[in-house]
Length: 83
Image (cartoon, rainbow, N blue to C red; front, side, top):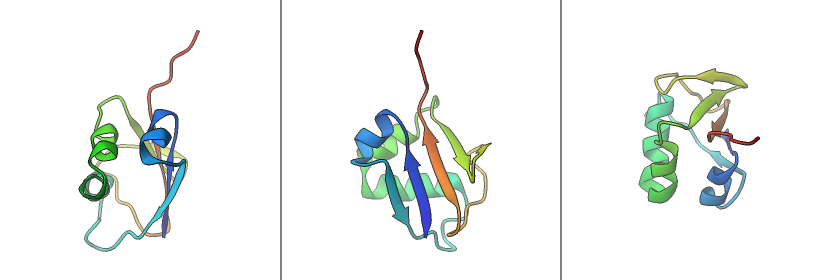
């Protein structure tokens, strides 16, 4: 199973900071994975599609067309602010 990590407000929307999800052959890219999440949880899916959210697969920042597998750790990173 892939390990999904939700940081900041995304964890609040997801109802937790981590989630395990089976990534099958139908879910070939990060964008398709986000669509699968959106089908189960509309609010979380909408938050993950926000243009300011960044993605990391196995600790490397990636784009939405990146391939994902069932062995990956996938992090969803909201924008960070502070001062």
